[in-house]
Length: 406
Image (cartoon, rainbow, N blue to C red; front, top):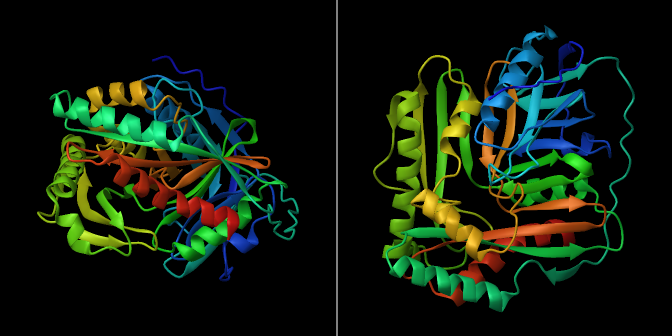
């Protein structure tokens, strides 16, 4: 794939240790914020030092890595902190469908971060003053169906169950969208503050997109954490409401769904890793709205692999696509009747060392002006009941409905 990088002038990057900044979200100005926060730590950013609109196609991760390598390789970097996330950082989000436009990488002009009890500020270029204005609430939210009504989506689930019963595939993940409209502009900081407080064990994120769209959410699913050569991935598949008996996750449907998701991650990572540890049994992850079967996979990469190489190998996992992957993606296109955009695609950050954290963009919304498009998806198996799957999707919508409404 030929790469036309269109690079900016060399970046001048300065990272400085700072005192504990407290609530990271509260330090954000109202200028298309970037964020990646878990349990109060992480990174927030604003401004734009460089942006790449990544060409769609099978080589998009290779293109992104080449763009970043050239950009960061030419930069003048002063980074005495020398921790993952210090120095220049690019925030990114990729579309679910490799053939769809909309994947982006953005290097913010300013990044404020905290990790392991240390905090730092990274600036690129000349210092400018960014005023922190009061957070504005959007007002009462009105909802409308997206591509499919609830009844139409249940019918799509029923059709998927028939396709699985015919032997065409084992599992497919079907998503719904829901449209939200507010009387006033939706301030991303209001959503980030609510999400990071209510879902501290998830990864709360905000990625500014093209045409001023922002992808905002709080995902429980860690696609990969890359530190040096060490990697970690948290696989989630098999879901019940948070107030249900955890034994509901012991059904054959939930167990097999989880086995498929773990197998897809193991198969993708094995060629990249010197060592890989995959636990035999999943653990239980309980969140305020749902509970999941979870398996934490760890390993050591072979030399030379960056976090984007791991993301490229993993996406799409069975947890967001299905099994077998190619057939599941065909069924998704046939039944969902919508473009997922960056929903269920990789979202996260990468620094100049190749370290970073990337999740799957779940429990999220595409926000623009006073409108938001919410997403939720469910793993459909042979035993799936359309009404139960609709109830699960509604439970997953509650994350972003809470973010919008409080």
